[in-house]
Amino acid sequence: MLVLERIKKGMESIDQDLLIYGLNDVREYWVRLYQIVSFDMILPSVCFNSFNI
Image 1 (tube, rainbow, N blue to C red):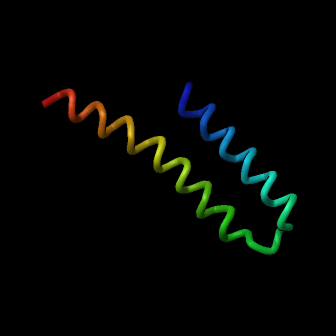
Image 2 (image 1 turned 30 degrees about the vertical axis):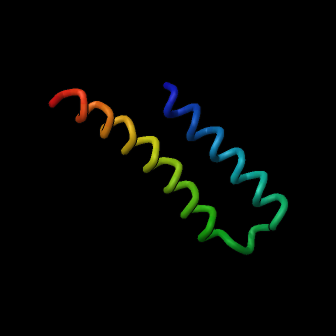
């Protein structure tokens, strides 16, 4: 649930950036979205793996 909230907030911040800079850099939109999602998915798995040793 927390991960989804962070992704949602990240997407909202990207939407704000798109409003400011316009829609001419759509690739940057997807790059930032991917960074937010991948960070939220990788970080918990790293933490869990370190505790399961």
